[in-house]
Image (cartoon, rainbow, N blue to C red):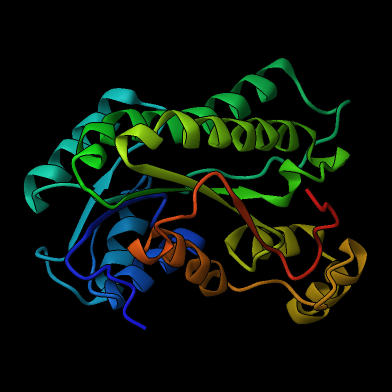
Length: 262
C-alpha cells in the first residue's frame, strides 16, 4: 500500500537511536524527507551515516528539546531546506526508574520539563508550517504508563499521563488548522536503556534470559520485549494521509502488557 508519504517532510526528535531512529528509517523507506535531531553529536552522526541517504533526503542537527531557541532554529532550517513541514514526531525523552521516596523535587521538575518541552517546543515551532501542509500530522511517542502507572516509575508515569491528556487537548485545538494529533503508547521496547539496565543489574543472566524474566515479571502477554521497528510501523501509519480521519487517539504498541480498556 502506498502510504502517500513520498516527498513529504517529517521532523523526528530524538532520532539518533531506538524508536526515533527506526522511525526515521521507516519514513525514508517510504520516500519521505526527514529532519531529525538529538543531543549527542557523535551518536547523531553515526546514525545518519548508517542510513545511507544524502542531504536532499535527510537533515540532522544537534538540539535539546528543552531549549526553545534551539528547536526554533532547527525547525527553521528544516523548512528552508525542504520547503515546508508535513509531520512531526515528538520522540525525545527517557524513563526515570525511581519510586516516591527516591524522587527529589529536582527529579519531578526535570521529568515534567523534559516531557512537556519535548512536545510543546517542537509543536510551537512547526505549527505554522504544519498548518500550511494540507495533510499535517503530529505523533507523540508516549507509554502505557500514561494509563497504567507504575510506582517504581512514579515521576515518569505522572508526566506521561499529563502528555496523554495534553495530546487529546491538542487534537481538538489544532483541528481547525488541519493538524491531526495522535499518540503511540509503548510498552517495553528493546532499546539501549534496557541493555544498560541489564548491565547494571549484574544478574549473571544473558541478555536474552534477562529479557524473558523481565517480560514475565511485567506481564507481557507476547512474552518478549518489542522491537523499535514495530513501533515505527504504527507511527508511520498515523503520519500517513491515509489516516486522515484519525485524530485524538492513542495506539498501544506493548505486546499485550496494557490492561486499560480506555
